[in-house]
Image 1 (cartoon, rainbow, N blue to C red):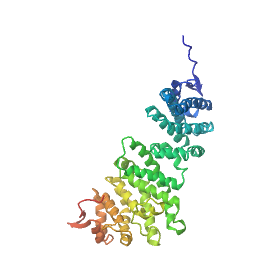
Image 2: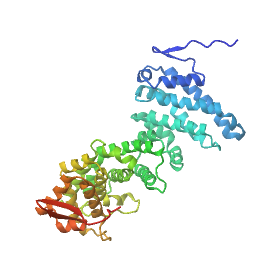
Image 3: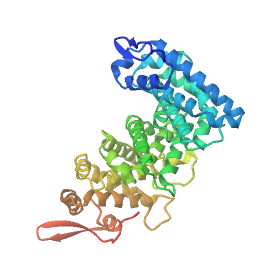
Image 4: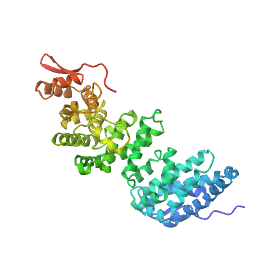
Length: 429
């Protein structure tokens, strides 16, 4: 007759299985830690027991790395490792006390070492990939909004683990880790990360169904960071800050937002992101005034260079602000009206006035003007109020008729009404 199981212990008033020594018990803990009250009352001894299981199970992985014939015996160990990571991941959600307790047990170092061991296993098992992903999620959650944990993750994981994740395309698939570690990166490292996002967004292969939720999480990070930090780029108007890396990294955030809003699966989320459209219009106005007042990097900004050098990316900033406004207003009446309310339409039209002097303009329709045309079309599509505004501006001499013609637009009088119409068949791509 089998020995009876020991009675469950209490987790500060919550029933939990004990001792924690098997998969069933770990799964029960993982479920319990989905509730905030259970996370907040968890004793440190629970995490020590989970860590003990994690260490014991990692020995099987070490053995399989040394002796490939042992790989076939990894199934149960990988299940335990996965559930340990899930349990710890859940315990860290919005709970700094647990983050600190788990970190102080040196669990981060054990987790990073184990994840690095996974790459040495020359096998392709779904269970291995699941354990790998849960490990990354744990690292992301323990570092979330916790500077001490971020520092420890950085010490253990950089550069070896991060380079491995980037090379194998796993880093971008771990939004929790990306969000947690973005604050610890240098500005050059941030630019590299943002370039990876752009490459993924504009690559030959479109985002998959599984990629979309991940990039929606990235979109939240990119948009919120841009809204909070975008005015840093105004430092570039001063010669002593002309190579300010923080400002230049912030500009790369705008590049990512432009590519994200070109993706229909991400666009609707960003179109309603709090404060994004308002901040973009405000920043466009500030750099437009700065560019007209003095000679600086924003005085002639119609070119977007192809090189990846961080020192060149500021030159297309105004173009990309206008492009982003156009994207955010695509088939979105609320945003069309918001731009009107913020006096953004005259600002966008006036942005073309300096473009003819741009020394980098080699096309019949310069880059800045192309995006102005695109933005105006999106602002006026099925929006009679915005159409009337531009038509009245032209009649009052506030909008240059030759400029409108250059943009493929003209004002036509029909009875008592002024009608803005397009003279082009297809919009710029």
